[in-house]
Length: 139
Figure: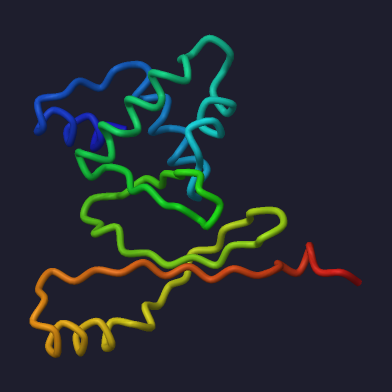
């Protein structure tokens, strides 16, 4: 966790107990988690939900976590290792919410073409696929 403490120090922030606990949960789970999921993964009394909300928003502002909406309107967060541009795509089960990170980006060429044709710069995108995982498919 020393690398995260250093990243916070570079931004003139401290590695508080709740921030450390949140970073540990996100590192262990390695999948997008909601603030309530982070809270429930912590030992009782470790932190309150309001502190987790504030900490996750701060960590997002500092580009240490990235926020995702996986189609259900719930903000989820994933830890970004340094250097990580946060560019990830996911396959999400509609029933159990299992999340699989995809290794490839299929739309980079289309993004470059759109930027060329539109004159836009700094283009980004998000891409999530939704379906039923093998465990949730009816037999």
